[in-house]
Each structure stands twice: as structure tokens, then as C-alpha cells.
Image (tube, rainbow, N blue to C red; front, side):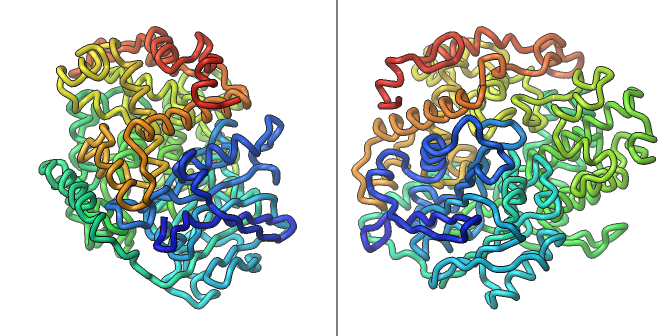
Length: 618
């Protein structure tokens, strides 16, 4: 809530008719959905039917602020983007940090709803005067960096925040992303393809930087939150200096670093692409508004083939999927290729997984060099990876097949290719082998946006003491990464907390990775201090669980049966053959059924009538 007592406005934009409708984001909506992810799920659940084509004009994209986004709350920069996903055919969901949330909040905007499709390429210019539809035909074909520069020049504001798609979004690559600046991406599930299908090249947001005044009464809650982050001394230090890529070696030492498309779980030379080595390339740290962590960084490659190239330091998932999963250990090549994904506008996780899958097929002789347009796609061949990326983004040659993700590509290639296509619900995994982490395995399987860790975030599996696990989840086995006991309760709670954090607009890195604030006590104090909503922790948990059930109903509408809540056969039937996690595989079905039961769903994963009644859902 701003100083005027408003929760902001919803700006509803129809690209087909070039109409704009503005209405209030009411207190009732705030109490029901919080904002951000929760509001988006609520809106799409009420407005998309089962006949929606993800790449048709009837699909709707919602970009919204969390309840606390852009406020005085620490690390409150997150903006959530949702639509029907062209990659999974289910809920599409992604979020980004940076300054977009602050800019929108300064304009009093809580959410953007993007409907329809333009007849010609267009970009939206949003400022204090309103929304303008601007011609983007001259921008079509430009990459994300070129578009960012061009739009700022066209609107005459070099401080504007620009959301843009690259050529991948224009060509409707099913895992195309949306970029803000050089290194903030709404990556997973293909939201860039949805923008491209609407011929929407960019959205610019201009506003005067007016820092929100903080009342003296709110300062204790803010200080307490900052202290909880800094008190996690080692994790705070590591993320401030190394970013999330500093966790790569730890995963390698556990024997769970997906390597060469999961052929092995440890990578020789992993230290070369870990954040400790990447730190030497950093030229300046980058921060999101009101964040004390500064986990982002700009890197410069000063020697070799990529001399003079500047970009963002890759994150943990990117290092795994473009690095280890593809057998690439050259740090300069990895940093260049991760930024090339951003420039082309493709998700780094899916792109790395797709290339690793194709490398695997090439190495096994399932796909030939001729089929790869003459490219020698051997493990770790950075030049070949670059060539494949460009073909994917432009849908040229083999790229047209790979642009649809591993699930569809494997179907088209045939010859047992599906055996090596690792995904859940059509969405590629992020590279951490689930066979040695049962909470992660269950999260991959039941995540409603597909093979994903971040929408569940089961970090307590590694952080909680056995005593706390027994108190909260009923068994000490919940924090034994090799055990299946208690994982249903753990994943249920983490899924609910994750939905709340995403709906508040707080970044999960400080809140959940560093501080581990899964009790929500500090978030509750922030909400009460900064919004005036007298919500309790129990009420936040109720709202979060309601959002999760609504998301489940949305996916059921689009055919997400319990058969999709599974993992690739490799992880269920083939034990890890080497390293510290030797012998591990996933006994999934009992965990899934336990999760369903604790959620109040039947054996097919459908919410029971009494569950729907408890959350006032039809």
C-alpha cells in the first residue's frame, strides 16, 4: 500500500483493439491473493478456458508486483510473469528482479494485463501520462540488447526499464525468455514466446525515482529482516561475493552435479566454472533495489577469443545446464554463452538441457553430423554450442526441431531419443540429479510449472536440524536427503511458503537461501508494518495454500493428470553408479501419494470437495 492508502491500479491492455482499461487493485484482492504470483494465478484461473492456445491471441499474460514489491521491504524487487505456457501447456510462471517493480510502483501500477495480439510489431511505452502503443517494426529482428538501447532512444529516457524479447521470442521458441537489462530474465516456461506471438517486442516503463517514505513504525520490522540475512554470516558472505554459482562445487562433491546429460554426476574440472573462479572476471557488483546481498555481477572477458565482451555472471542453474550438463568447463566460453542466451532471448536452463540432450544423441549415434547441419556437437565444444544456439533462436535447420524443447524434439527425432530427454511436464530440469535428494525429486515431480526447484524451494531438507524436522514434519527422516519419509509434508510446506514469498514480491535468495525464514514470522511483521493489513502468519499460510490449490485446479483444467507428476525413467530405475551418492535412485510413488494426502487431494491428485470448501474454491 502506498502513502495514499491505495494498493495500486490494474492496467488492462488489449493489443488487438489498442484499448486500455484501468481499475483499482482493491484491498479485497490484496487479502485474497496478496499480489504477484497469487494475483496472476487468480486472474488466469478466472479468465482462461481449456481451449486456449498458448500462442494464440486468446492467451493472456499478466505481469504484476508482489504485495511488497518496490516498497521499503528489504529485497522486494520481484515481478511475476504468468500465462499459459507454450512449453508445458500448463501454467507458465517466471519472475525477475531489477528495477522494473520499483518503476511500476512509482507509477502506482500493481499489475499489467496483456490481452490479444497486435497486427504489426508494437512496443508499449508506459509513463506518468499513461500507455502508448508504439510502432516496433524497425525493432523486429533486433536482439535484446539492441532493443533495449533503441527503445530508450525512441522514448528519450535512458533510465527507463525495458522488458524485451529477442529473436527467439519473435520466432516463438517455446522456451524463449523476457529480458530486463543485460542480466534479469523471466526465463523458464516460455513467456518470451507468448510475447512474440502477440507481436509485442518490448514494454518500457519510465518514472521518476521516488523512494518510498518509510514510517518510523516500520523500521524495527525492516531492521529485523536485514539482521536475519546478515546473521547467516557464511551464506551471506558467499552470496555477496560469489552469487549462487558458488554452490556448484558443493553439488559436485555430493556426487549430484548432472554431467554430460546425466551420464555421470561429477565433473572433472568443476572448480573452473564454480563462482570462486568466476569471481576473478567480475568488474562490478550489481544490486536490485533495497537488497543488501548484491548477488549479481558484471563480468568482462579481457583475453582470448571473447576479449572485450561484457555481460552478467551466470547463476547456479545456468552454470550447471550450460556447463556441466554439456561437459563444458571453460569459464570464458560459459560466460559468453550464458550471455548469448540472454541476447538471443532464450532461457539458459532449457537451452543448456536441449544442447546436452542433442550432444548425447550425437555421441550415441542417434543423430548424425549431417542432421546437425554439419556441426560437430561433441561434449564441451563451445563453438558448436554457439552455432546451435543461433539456429534455435532463428529456427533454422536442426534449430527448428530443438526450439520446441527436449520433449517434442525427441518425439520428432525418434530412434530412442525420448530415453535421453529429461523433463517433467515438458519442462527441462535444472541439472541437479534428483536421485540423491528426495525432497528435490518430489519437488521436480509435483511442481506445477514442470521440472523445477525454485517454485517449491525445499531448502529445509538441507538446513533444518533433525529435531526441528520431527517437530514440523513428523519425522527426522525429512532432513535425510536419501530418505523418503516426511518428504510429502516438507514439500507441501515449502510449496506454500514459496507461493507466499512469490506473492509478496520478496527475493528467495535472501529470504529462503540465506536467512532460511521459512517460519514467515518476519515476513508477517513486514506486511503488517508496510501495508496496514493486519494479517497473521496463519492467515498468510491460508492464502498461500489457497493459491497452490487454485494453481492445481488451473492445471487440471488443461489436462494435468497424476500421470504427469513423475520423473524420467532414468531417475526411477537406474541407480547412480559412482561417487558419494552411489546406489541412489528415487522411490517416487509413495512420496507423491503422501504429498497428495497431506494436501487434501485424492489419489489422482485432485483436491477433495472438503479441501475446495475450506478454501472457498468452486
